[in-house]
Image 1 (cartoon, helix red, strand yellow):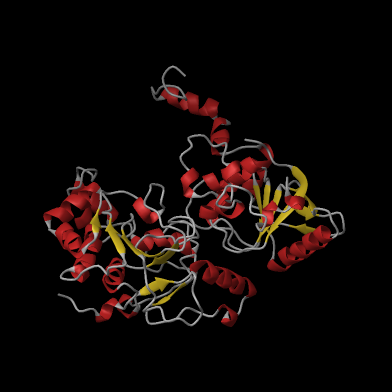
Image 2 (cartoon, each protein chain N blue to C red):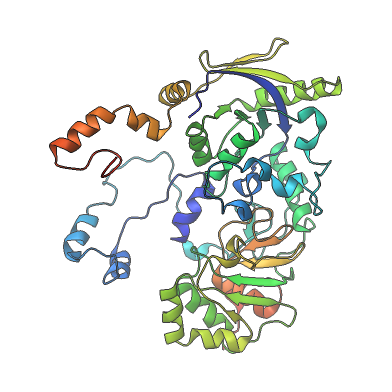
Amino acid sequence: MQPFTTHAGTVAPMDRANVDTDQIIPKQFLKRIERTGFGQFLFFDWRFLPDGTPDPAFELNRPLRHGASILLARRNFGCGSSREHAPWALSDHGFRVVIAPTFADIFYANCFQNGMLPVKLDEADVDELFRRAAAAEAAGSPYRLTVDLGACEIRDDAGFVRAFAVDPFRRTCLLEGLDNIGLSLKHVDSIAAWEAAHGLPPVGGPGA
Amino acid sequence: MTVCNMSIEAGARAGMIAPDATTFDYLRGRDLAPRDFDRAVARWESLPSDAGAVYDRVEVFAAGDVVPQVTWGTNPAQVVGVDGRVPDPAALADATDRAGAARALEYMGLEAGTPIAGIPVDRVFIGSCTNSRIEDLRAAALVVRGHTVAPHVRAMVVPGSGRVKRQAEAEGLDRVFREAGFEWREAGCSMCLGMNPDTLAPGERCASTSNRNFEGRQGKGGRTHLVSPAMAAAAAVAGHFTDVRGWSFR
């Protein structure tokens, strides 16, 4: 898994609460058997018109938000079905950070398993970020943020600095690029020794 | 199982119910039930919460007092009793809730203040893992028996599993539904999430016993109202939402 240390990028504000996983990645695209390639379908029903062209009214389709890697949203982001395809789609599209006041629990955990950082900030701070993003865009440039997981800090170029809280274990895993499998493989020697002592085939199954 | 499934929509990671005789009777004799069933039951009986367990928050509901619920919006929390009205977003205290409700009403094609009972439906879907066990189909069939699906409504029943389908057929429930004008379908996910061709057309309004009513869940532009199996059956016959507690059973 790609580690997450410090990320600087532009912000895509999405002024909606309760963005559910059916919107993030609609069900008709869940038939792929890889974790990749979902980005093209991200927010599909909102992003595209019936004829397949991008809907200019959809907030992420505004030119200043192209290439954004930090998604800014309202509370309860990622609610609904527990499909891991939701973080896969966001990540595949290029998002590394999602900022919101609250997240649905399963989505929140899935982000950490996929090298993405979900940042919880107070509603007032999220309001402030929406205001700053709107001001930057009104002046003709995208809004930029730096998200520093080492320092647990988020900042812009104009004096906004906030600390954010994150579970220490999840933080370490993300800094080191460890998902659950990576974490288990750190103990591969102990696992192999235990399996040998118990007459079991080695890690990875027979012949591995 | 319905409560456990929907706990997620209340923000939970899991919903658990202490196993009781109903649970054990349900499991006894099933394909994947433990062979030494009595020993398993003894173990399961040790699972309920300890006396004196402490909870962050305790809510007590008398199920009999809960008015049949109908969702009006695009998440399961946007819900009201069938004797209620579509809420006015402007009356909500929180700005984010107001914006969300206004967006939901626009998507759902509803006006604030409209009585829920009387909102016409185009489609009725009785199915999904959440609400199409044999007990659900019996409850729906009881409502449907002797009635006919409203002429403008397309209604379907999709049993929760092949076993449920066979059981329902053995009890003659499929005939009750078919004679009333329902489609009787093979078990599957069907219109719960519309991964197969069972989808709503844009703007179609559906009374559905599935578990999620997000935008586009049952088809792009489709309008989903979550209801119980009995309420869905009543909506199919009446052609609009109606309080099943006042139903004329035949």
